[in-house]
Image 1 (cartoon, rainbow, N blue to C red):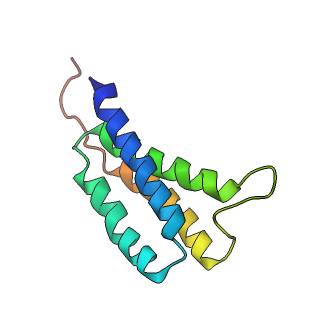
Image 2: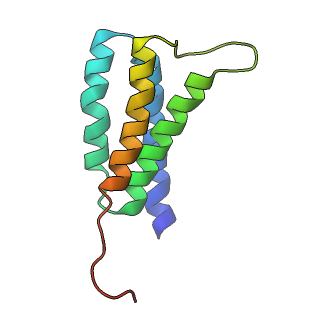
Image 3: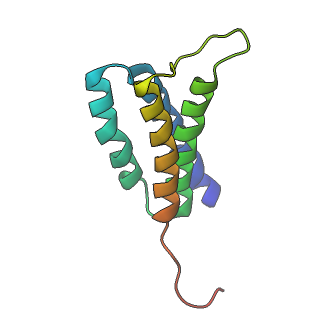
Length: 108
């Protein structure tokens, strides 16, 4: 049951991550993604799997674009805009992990 909740959130994270990478250099793109990424994290179904799946899908996509390829191709340049995107990927994972609901009571 957890996998059925994890995979759609992971796919949504990858899709939003691609949009983040392709539009991070534009002013409107940064503004739209500053609203869309946290909103998608909040809109993810409550629970561990959807939040972490979305955050990891987004962060891994951004990191893959930051590292580039062996040929030297890259999508994110090491300037202020690129660093903001990279730091926001780290912050999103931290926020997703910090906001996981805690189960109270005895484990069953």
